[in-house]
Image (tube, rainbow, N blue to C red; front, side):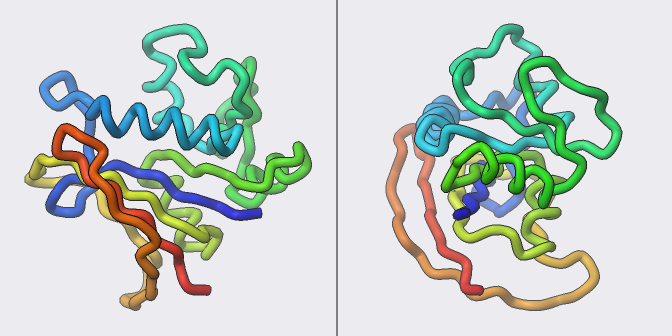
Length: 169
C-alpha cells in the first residue's frame, strides 16, 4: 500500500499551527479534501480529529474511512480507532485501499516517518512565519539525512505552494 503524508508547513518549515488569529488556509483545506476523497481514507491523531470535529457533523468526509491513531482513546462512533501506525495501515489494506493518507498531527506524522512507513510527502507551504512550532522528524534519536525526490511543485492559490516528494527507501 502506498502511504502519503500530507501536511501544511509554514514558510520557515514548522508545522502550521491553526488558531483563531491564524486559521488554516482555505486552499490547503480544499486540497486536503481532494486528497482524502482520492484516497478514500485518512489517518489522523486523536487531538487533531477532535479539533476537526469541533464544528460538528461529518463535514466533507461522510463516505471516507477515517482511522484515529490513539493508544488511549475509547471507541469513537463512525471511525476506526487503531493503537499504532501499523494497525491503521493493516485496517485500511484489509478494507481494500491501495493508498493511505496520513493527515495529522505532528506526533502521528513523526511516528509514521520514524518507522519508515511513508512513501510520499505532500507539503503545502503557507505564506506565514511562526516563531516556534513543531517540526517534521525522521528520527528523534539520531541525526541523519533521508533523500527525497521532487515529484511536483505547484501553486494552490493564496500564496500557498504545494511540494510533492517521493521518499527513497
